[in-house]
Structure formats: structure tokens, C-alpha cells
Image (cartoon, one colour):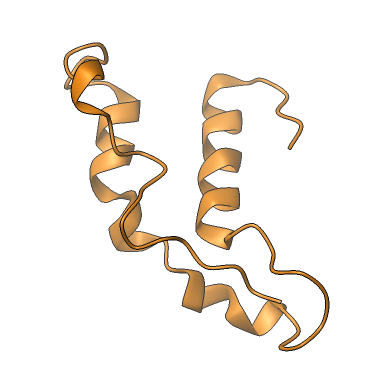
Length: 78
């Protein structure tokens, strides 16, 4: 079953206390600016069964984590 992101939260939204910790011209800042525009959970909805199992982690979060993993060349175990 397709999990959906909370429209009030974002994987890449920087809390007010962390403003300025990531350089404005960094890959992370640029990704945070455009990721919600290009990554929509509905785009991958066909890959999930409608009424089977528990809701998944939203595909927009999974795909964002995979891009960050590739960019940083690290192993992430979710």
C-alpha cells in the first residue's frame, strides 16, 4: 500500500535553528529547493498494491535517500 508524505512536512525542509549551517550553493540546498517539485508519490503509485499490507515509506522519501546515498557514496540501511 502506498504511503504518502505529510503535506506539512518535508524531508529537505531545514528547521529555523539550522539555517545557515548548509552552504546555499551546496548540492543539498539545491536538492532541497527542487525535490518536492520533481518527486511526486503519485508518479510511482502503480508499483504498489491498493489494499495489501501496511503503508510503505513514501516513494519520494526513498528516492531522495537513494540520490543522497549515491551523491555521498555511502551505505544507508533503512
